[in-house]
Image (cartoon, rainbow, N blue to C red; front, side):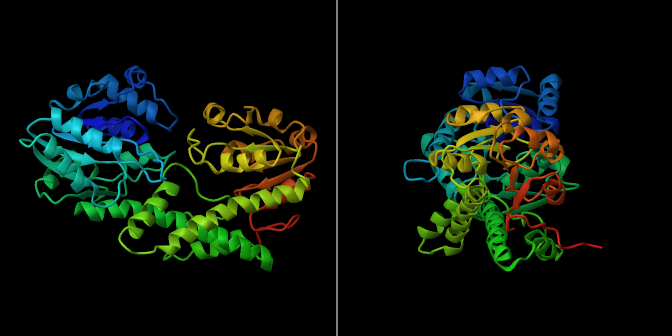
Length: 442
């Protein structure tokens, strides 16, 4: 089958390369000529494990190419995906302008009968509006509109593309379902296909991310209670997660959720509800708890260094999660900005995201080597749980630092080992000097 993918951001590139690996002929399109040139050389503009190999495989097979022309991309395509980005507008909403522009351009250039698939995360009702826009642009177009939301995790997006746990297809046009079944046929023996209407599909995507964010905030609120009651927050969440009705995923106390998707999707779902007369107060409180989790880390740092002004604090990890170089919405940079405003000299180190952080945060001194980044620091803060930071030489770190103190913003470092090496250790939901891990699963 011939497919076109409009937009080559994280979702677009992975969608295009994934479809090509399934045997389809795919053209990816982007208005940014420099990005197209990079992709045509088989190079990715961001880090995602295994994506380079997937992209090269598609290019070498001849089934994947890229262009900056909409007409070139969609002319012979049976299925056209919209993977346009949704940046925040002046009001804080995620703009749908790029999605609408893409729909208009596709309508002008598409084959007479086209399956138009919205991959971008959008509010309920958007797929229907896109169909209206396309038909107004070209009334003779026999358009089949589909919502097919992505459920990709950065750092594991290739795995999620090739081995998805579910594929959701939403349409009011029954002709859509056989086409999407054929498109995804190589995945269906092991993946669950869910067919529904587009509004349900759209709301399900927003709700999934909002629920994960709420689950993280619940763990962070519990961390405050654990600190006040001298309980072990990791033990609490581990016991809770052992219940299959709850599950352990996303139930870990830390610096809060971040990234490009979760914060925006929480806001979007809250506003979708408000505009229809429902106050989704739970989501507002989840966002409030998320902000409080970051403030609690600032308080821990202040407890360690006393006065913040003039101190040096080093952030270990700048990407919003391990396995990616994406710093959009990263809790590390939000924390760093709070510290910078308080007069702290903020350094940062990350195995992958150093360049992105330099471009995003001019106030941040990025030093790729973590030992040099720790030189003369009053406190280290683990912000991203890269495995590289779990095996650092503690004695070397201690000798480099002006004051040996570590704030573990992810509760993943070996607390007893760190304190035995002469450090002051503070974890999330733990008092200074306490050793967590009072639960042993036998």
